[in-house]
Image (cartoon, rainbow, N blue to C red; front, top):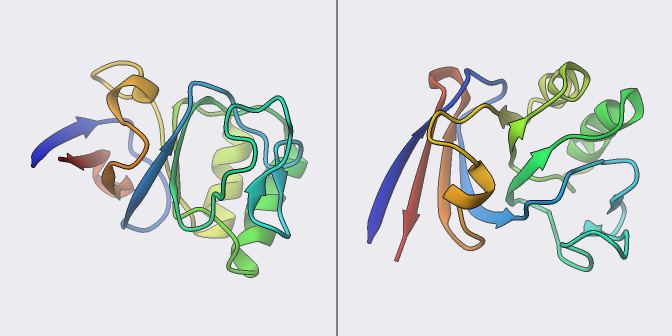
Length: 138
């Protein structure tokens, strides 16, 4: 088993571990998700039909504004949320939403494009306060 340590900007939320769900697509909690069923519902999204519940989601960037931010809190309050979201870059509004939802979120990875560094199915541990993401793969 290979282990990779990725440094990033200090993030928000608790330390979590889980399975990665990765795409180079962007992310909007408002437009991309069915927040009742816990799946990506926008047909044009590269993860359409897949569950995001309890995953470590990895995206290029966030899209959307205030509605996306409060939707993270709403999803977490119903236990139909990802464990963490990792981005190449995130906007301040979505970072505030993650903080409100007590959801782990990090961005700005030193080694480069996080959508290329992590693969779907990898076991990932996110330590936002340390700016550290550990990836384990077979």
